Length: 209
Image 1: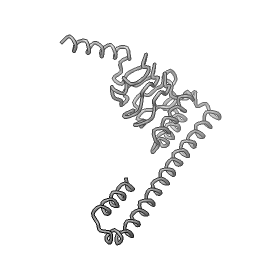
Image 2: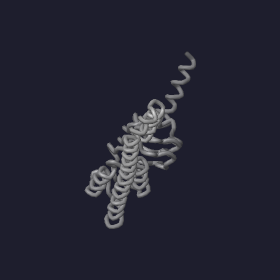
Image 3: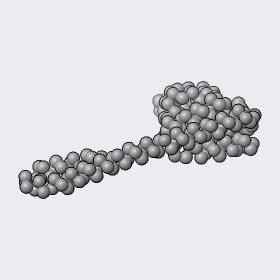
Image 4: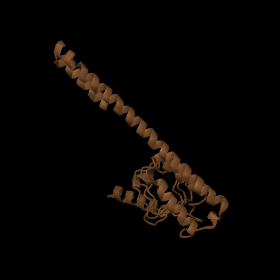
């Protein structure tokens, strides 16, 4: 955007100024171009540094939880236990500032490690900020996502069958975009089957009117 503005200024000067005026302002234009280039480079470097920081935070979390999985009976814990509380606190810290792709990686790690399954939950995701996460096509079948913030997350073609979404912050449009919801507990506490039945019934009522 900055480079675009500089180019626009140059074009305006070339079109409205005389040859002498253009020559006189050439130094100013050159200075603006250099400043724009420096600013662009700084923005790129900042983005790179930020991404590296995210990756470092994520790798640290993986290492810490992996250690607990291998050296201590983390899988035999349950939400509220000491180990579970430690992992939850670490998870909350790790999620801060993560981008959409890294948030997906963290969630997938917890799921693959069998720590957020509905049949044997170990780590609670209550109040977990998954806003804007890239969850397109992800397999979270049977995951305990109760109380999570899924607003603006990309759930298209995601497998959320048998997942617990009770109390989750998510829009109806997001849910309708999901690939599979069979057996899931919806945000309002109803089963997916009851939820979709009511939706279909509402649609028929509207048509009959």
